[in-house]
Image (cartoon, rainbow over all chains, first blue to last red; front, top):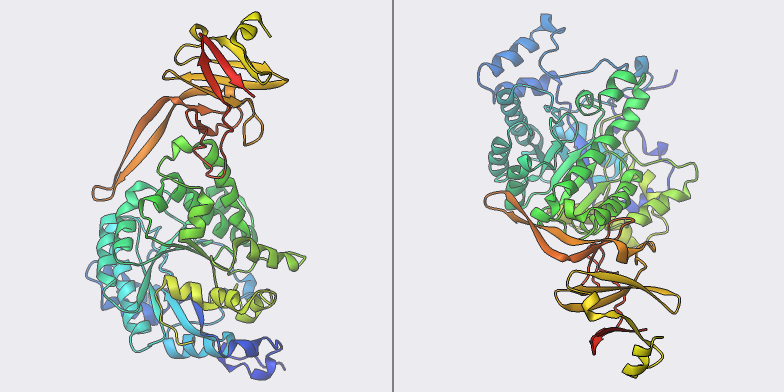
Length: 387
Length: 132
């Protein structure tokens, strides 16, 4: 009977097939998208320490053994996500920074610096006070459970767009923590697209605190708000998942240009996660629209593409899979190693292995490879790596 | 061309396209000279001429709307954006794709790498003279 390991970390080195892995031993790889299992009981129990009533009561109620059917705490959807066990949606539970993140990522993926986010997905929580309270608690758990004592770890502090002023306060608060290196926003489930001027307090606070803004695409329940036809009318999670990340990032990116956000905050950096890179041809379309309708977006002083090359970054995960694999090299070349960042998306089912990315970087120079593997992330997130 | 041309003693590459009183401020004309369409503009009393061929995709640029444009300013302290209508009568928009050009300089407002080729034009003895 085949042995199935309980943890990715238990896989033996003999399973490794790719000789390129040797090159990674000397490269300080940064993984800019590592998730925790936010809804796990252990983490929810941590949340209690940082919540006041009535929201503390809600989590307590949810944690009672007899209330497992209670699903009002966090939004959810009704997809058959894991195909009855064929395709686990998470490869493991992530509650312990050493065992579940550092050991796994360093052994399996050659990652030295994980950038962790809680992925609380609170955009669909309608009560503003509750969303703000849960978000603040989640950031505290991120710092206390996952960052404290882990010198090579960094964290992205979440904000919820419901209350931009509260978000700005939260950014000022968490920015005092050395290991917080960015501001995390879910692209899906927002009432108004994220470039809207109502969110400018968030962007100003991020820029004031030298923190980049990171957008996380998702096929989350929030997709029903942004793109109801996907969630309600399409039939499979395959379709939902294919479109969700890309559409939500396209909406966010377009909204940022529509409102001139990168021009308003020229020292702010924008990072997009989890939609791959093939969708970036949208930027050429934005160029064209800008040139035809400049007077609608007069704050923009240059083409969207020029802003992208100066202030924007994109995580490579999930790697697109053209039938002709040489096209991956062309995609990477098109955006250039200056704007791409490596991410695994551990522990989710569509993780990327560092070696899988490296496969496409063989024709690039060592400097270009290193930009994607760690240098761009080190610059943007201000991580002092020892190469 | 006309007897007037002869009277002005112009070279072969110089062409009278109108009397100056026919091209008053804010007016334009499209002349066909040596098989080329040339747009001639009187903007604020100054003459400007450009090929009627948009540098973007070859649209009839000089037939486009001559109006102004919107400029914006962002107040970071107040987080307020102020929009202003400016350069009225100086911005030429191509009727095909809307690319904006400063009709007084030929400079393109949306693409640094693109500008209109200015064609020499002058007023002489009551005539508008274009040099190709």
